[in-house]
Structures are given as structure tokens and as C-alpha cells.
Image 1 (cartoon, rainbow, N blue to C red):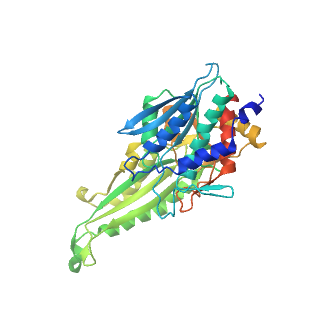
Image 2 (cartoon, rainbow, N blue to C red):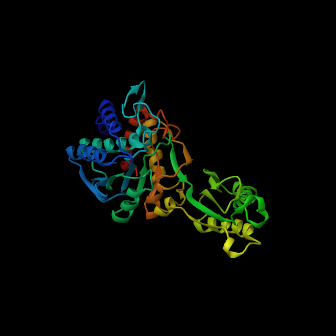
Image 3 (spheres, helix red, strand yellow):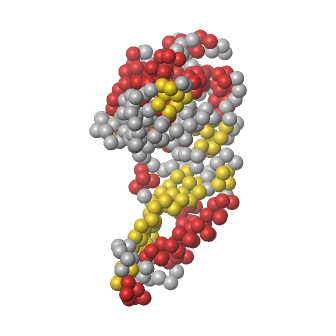
Length: 392
């Protein structure tokens, strides 16, 4: 297929202006309206082009933007997925300027991930303007709340009609992310017996028990995880992220707490992750009465959405389609890699939509004080997204 007609409808300056205006609209959790303004902005842009668009209310005035170009029904359907929220502008100067320096556009959310979602929205506009009808439906799902628990994607996965395949426009340096680790947070509660430090022998020092637990995780569990690898993702990981306990120097601590993150690879399950933590707890509880048993539970962040691993084989149609689309635009196939972070692609994957990640920008720039995205990459990504439905 000759894509000249399609690419002629992708105006780089118009795309840049679209993205710049999107970056200039704050859309984070500390705002009362959160994603309302940016969602309305994108929806109005799509509606003005005659694209079927709706606001899917998730809670209050917070809504996902869902847009659809219907196909003939003769081929596979695909979702362009991304989120429209960002984190707050921590320590940033002029975070919503949308200033352009050379090839880079700066601002909170430029990289993570307004660059990707705007490229996707504009790809749909280009397809509509070109008058092309794909064989399968094309759906844009612009989600709220990815940064703080994937509220939008979770609601969408439960209530929308999912497509065959999906592409999440998170910043991947223009590489195809076909795998990502699962993610779960746990909190351990370590009891002790509080007493005066002058008679410490009558107490049970919860901080010492905390140290024993951390040592057990570091010296016994972590070496096992390092031996457990995935060809694209490397090894499983455990991170001791936060520990606290005690009151003051002259008091034997009566309680302590530890928060742990486990990033686990395909082949592992949440059940197997918990089983290994059970072993560590069992060892550290040996010799203590039940009242002093160390316990742990999933943290609220991880209870909101199940963040299981994602693994799409290279021979899968969505991966092959992205390789073809990339070759059409870039002259070569994009590299395939394992994504180090976790994103909404996992929510769609769990719900039955085989989803990979591909987008402009680098995760190294996401959440940074100088967040930016390459306009050249945004333009290239837009062209690739536009081609994808026609090569599946």
C-alpha cells in the first residue's frame, strides 16, 4: 500500500501546535479538575474532524476520552492507548510553557505521555482526513489516572468493548516494548515488646527483628531472583524501599515496618511471589509466640489494580505489524526490548487485549525537572501509528 496520501495529511507544524497546547494544560492529581480540561481539549479536536468521540465518565467529572474510526469488519481492530494525566510539576520552573528549544518541546507531561497520546490522536485525524477506511476498527483510549493507580484503564477494561490488539504510546525511545515486569508493593509489620532501654533484656527490639528480615531478603531471596531471568527483561527484582520504627533512643522499639516492592518476570505469579515472602517471614518468626509474629499485606496502591507481567512473542501479529509500520516510516524495523517500567498496557493485556508499547520520548526524561520530548520522534511516531492499522 502506498501511504503518500496518508502522510500528506500529517502536518508537522499542526501536530506540534496540538502537542504544545496539550502540554500547556495542567492535568495532575493536585488540581481540582485534574484531567477534565485536557480531556475536553482532545475530545473537541477529534469531534471537529468528524470522528466519533465520547467522554467515558470514571468518577465525578473525570472522564476517559474514547474515539473510534469504524473499519469494514474484515480485519483486526486496534486500540491506541495512553494516559492524559501527569505527575505534579515538582521543582520545575515554568512547567507548562511548552517552550521549544531546537527539536525538543519542554513541559510537565511532554514525554510522559502527552507526546504519545497527541501523536495517536493526530494519527486518527490524518486517517479521517485521508478518507481511508481500515479493515478493523481503530479506537483511541485516552485514560485518566495512570500515574496513581490506573483508575481510567481499569474502568475502561471493565466497561468497554476491547479490540483485538493494542499499542500503548508510553515513552520507549521509539522501540517496541513487548514485555514488562509485574509489580506489587507489600508492607511488613514487625511487632516487638516496648520497654525502657535500661532493662532492654525484658523487651523485644522490633528494629533488630526488622534488620533480621531485611538480611534474610537480601541474602537469601535476592540471590535466587538474580538467577531467574527473562531474555528481554533481565532478572526479577526486590527493593527494600522504606523502613521505620521506634520512638527514641532510650526506648526498646515496640514496632517496626518495612515496605517492599517486587518486580517479577513472566513465568512468576503473584502467588509464587507471596510464597517466597512467606518463607522469609516463617524463618524470622521462628522462636516467637504468635502475638509477636511478623505479618505482611499488599499495600493499597497494589490492591487498586493487578500489575501482572506482560509478554508478547515476537511472532505475534501486533509486534509484526509494528515492525512493518516502523519500516515504512523509518526505513528499518524498530528494536524490540523489555520495558523497565509498568504502564496501562498491562491492564489491557490482563483484560484480553494483546498490547505492546511504542512511543516517542525517553523514560529518563519522564518525571524529571526538565521533562521534554523530541518533536521529530513525535512526528515519526504519528506516521507509524497512522500506518499500523493498514499493515495488521
